[in-house]
Image (cartoon, rainbow, N blue to C red):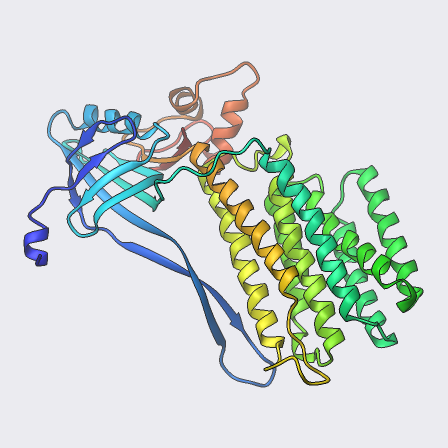
Length: 410
């Protein structure tokens, strides 16, 4: 079918509640993102870019309801969009789609028309296998198992020399120094210090207790994943430590040095997974769908970067004296817990609040808008939430001007 024939067709949107809408539309875009890793090397111009597997397909859709009833129709559409079930869209260009909306942005400034910009993500239709296992508990147990597998792999392959112990000690010390100043909970600070002291003591004992040593090192490196702060704060801390570890990757020559990187950097990735399931009520980490997808994209990006870095260290074969090939069991186990954690985060995203964006058609204020979108409460929690979501400061406390973009979540 030619594009001329295609654009003669209407777009048909069937929302989760079964209602059908056939608005005017502009074609919008389709995005297929890939996991990309970039490498910059000292004294070499340019950047080495490596591409891995693609992420989920996203679409941007712009629709228009027009006529004297456009406000009523757009309000009905917004209500339909709150249904948690996926949409079915018959699209003139992209054919049949099954999608979930990530966000909707409303513009009523045209009076006779309502413009709605929608971000969509494609989903599969098959139900996941039913399980009586609590996903959070499973992931936490899988993290422990992954640490054991990684430690066993290290112990089997490495008899640490003095230079290796110095490298491990440096990695642990840098991680501890960067993280310890962030802890606000005194009991966690004491526990973290005790883990650090234990790891240093075992490092000093050298190769006589390799298994105990590497386990203690992992305990220090992964501990920031349970700090009592927001999930993204912990993820960024673990990310910074992984990138710091990776900054001197070109200096890793011996198989032992490469194995130390495999273990330590892999622990940071495991920590990211662990951080994603250790959330605290005070921080509202998964309050809306955008926050959930931010965590998903973050974990997948740095997991793929880790694989790319290991690939750069790998030698052509395992038969030479200085050969290095990443351990299959350890990487396979890590891959499994990353995939499972991401699948569970997608489930959270489907139940999380969706973002709505509205251009104000007239002047308003914080109290009226909070009442409109959330309702008022005795302790002004909803007012605080509304102001935080929209970065409202003192200058807008009493008047928010017409044309201002307002975000809220439903």
